[in-house]
Image (cartoon, rainbow, N blue to C red; front, side, top):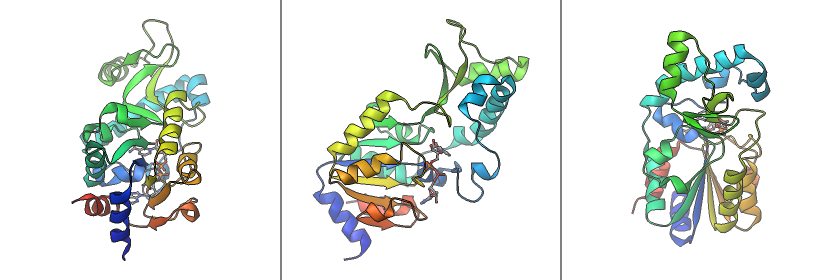
Amino acid sequence: MNQNAALREMIESSKNIVFFTGAGISTESGIPDFRSPGGIWSKMAPIQFQDFLSSEEMQRESWRRKFETDKTMKIAKPNAGHYAIQRLIETGKASNVITQNIDNLHQVSGVPHDRVIELHGNATYASCLSCNTRYELEVIKQSFIVKGELPVCKFCGGLVKTATISFGQAMPIEPMQKAEEAALSCDLFFAIGSSLVVHPAAQIPLLAARNGAQLVIINREKTPLDEFAHIVINTEIGHLLSEVTSY
Ligand code: NAD
């Protein structure tokens, strides 16, 4: 049996699938990942959370980058990979998608919000670091670009930042708990388009595998978790997922 046929059979016989996605699922939508050649890190180093907190210049740099990268993110649409996952969640075959992505594309593809577990937040809005009040980016952009103003919370005076988790920032407790529960409840776990080197997120697939779920890794290149997987497929995501999930 070839790999695709084996994958189809695993999907058909599974009672509960959980997906885990990284930046690689969105490159086919035009959003660069971090680590591939030409990816975001080949152009600029990430801003650490502590630097954002302590330096006004880093806050300005962070907003400049945000409004620059937003040009790409705003026009990105879900691709075949996102829609394949959406279909399996809609039919009840899969329960959740745990994502490291911040691009909102799983939700745009039609996955209900409560089925998407965002480990690194969401870049389509901002929030106050002290009281969590939500702010829309368009309003921040106008004040920042036109008047050079940094956003400050109008309720508590706290710093406002995109609602994403930066390097050095604590992981959000509730999504991590939900991700662990999902990983422990499934019998088939897909890790898709992630280099699986960003921790603690990368421990989630391992948790599922150690709990007895079959682990499938789909990624262009090798990952540190390949040795724990039942199947590793090094290929482009969209085409493969469409093929193995269409009936
Ligand atoms: P990563 O950049 O470390 O790894 C992406 C992996 O996907 C790479 O191994 C690459 O070879 C593979 N890949 C890229 N395109 C692919 C394709 N079409 N088919 C198959 N494989 C493909 O990303 P990561 O593991 O998600 O971790 C980095 C962090 O980057 C995450 O925490 C995430 O928050 C952030 N990030 C998110 C986005 C987004 O939201 N779209 C984009 C860039 C970075």
